[in-house]
Each structure stands twice: as structure tokens, then as C-alpha cells.
Amino acid sequence: NSKVIQTPRYLVKGQGQKAKMRCIPEKGHPVVFWYQQNKNNEFKFLINFQNQEVLQQIDMTEKRFSAECPSNSPCSLEIQSSEAGDSALYLCASSLSRDRGANSDYTFGSGTRLLVI
Amino acid sequence: GDSVTQTEGLVTVTEGLPVKLNCTYQTTYLTIAFFWYVQYLNEAPQVLLKSSTDNKRTEHQGFHATLHKSSSSFHLQKSSAQLSDSALYYCALSDRENAGAKLTFGGGTRLTVRP
Image (cartoon, rainbow over all chains, first blue to last red; front, top):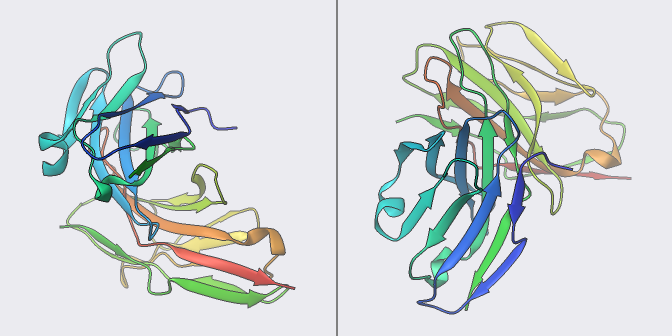
């Protein structure tokens, strides 16, 4: 069982609807990532956080996607207006901050599979 | 930008025979961490191997890989494939100098081991 908990496991939304998914990172991991895994099993990085602060995000995330990692609450990724092309597996991962010389693992959750119809 | 290439999308091998999954990369990072992840059906990707040392062999669960910076490669090998090895395999890299750096993944290779 993964130490990164993602909910819900499955999500079905109509086009234009909001879609929200949550992630509880591994205990002690301050860095959280969101990836989209498409139907061809390719990974696309969306956004990452260290504690509550955004480190990096792609353009797509800035426009229709919003994400946050509030203190003492699960992290979340929300698509404001779902499109058919958003149908994918959304994976959350967490890691330790990497000090110089360290080789921190990234722990992945099992994902939320979104279907936009 | 940085990129990871896995040339085979699909590899099929007979149980007991050796298997090799290719991974090459391009990066501007000065120090790099490399990973092989394995993803079984409907499960989370999990790390199989990791390395950041040039020309040092890394082994785990019968698999091994050696980072070769001279050829920009980190191929995954196993001497005797098992049925339970059937899964998706991803090569990935990240910047070791950057705290919280994202992983850059290859396109993945689906390994099927047949009896």
C-alpha cells in the first residue's frame, strides 16, 4: 500500500464541470508533485509545492488548473472547467527536500482516474 | 530542455531469458539523480533502482543498471525474466542540486514476460 493517499480513486465529470482531487503526502515529506498520466501512459508534470509554496508549474496549470497544499490539510488539484482531453490518471507524489548529496526517493500515490464525458 | 528517451514502447520476452530496457537522456543539469520506476496494473509507480554515480552498478530485486554519462544512458537489465516482472517501466531523472526538483520521465516501456 502506498504511503501517499489519493482520493477519490475514480472521478467522472461532465464537460465544463469542476473536478477536484486530493492527496495526503507521505508523513514528513514537505515536497508534493502532481503529474498527469495520459492514455498512452506518458507522464506530464503539472505543479509542485514545498510546504504551501508553489515551486514550479506549467502553463496549463496556471490557466484552468488550481492546486494548493494548505498546512494540516490534504493537498488538492482542481480543474475549473473539465474538458474531454483532461481524462487521465492524476498522480500525486511526495519527497523529502533534497540536500546536496542526498538522493531522495519520490513516493507516488495510486492516483485519481478522471473521466470527462 | 531535459529529456529521457525509452526507445521501446513494448518488450516481450520469454520467462527465464535476459531482458534489457533502454534509457538515454539529455540534460543541462550538472548533477543528476536517475531512477527506474515500475508500475503494475492499477498500482502506484514505485522506485526500482536509483543512481547518481557514474559507472557504478546498482542492483535491486534481480534488476541492475549502470549510469554511463559518457553515453548518456541508464539501461535496465535482468539476467532471467520472471512472469511477475510484467509491468510498465519508466526511466526518470531529476536535478540533484535543486530541492524539490521534478522528475522528468521517459515514455515508458511495457514489459510482457510470457511462459
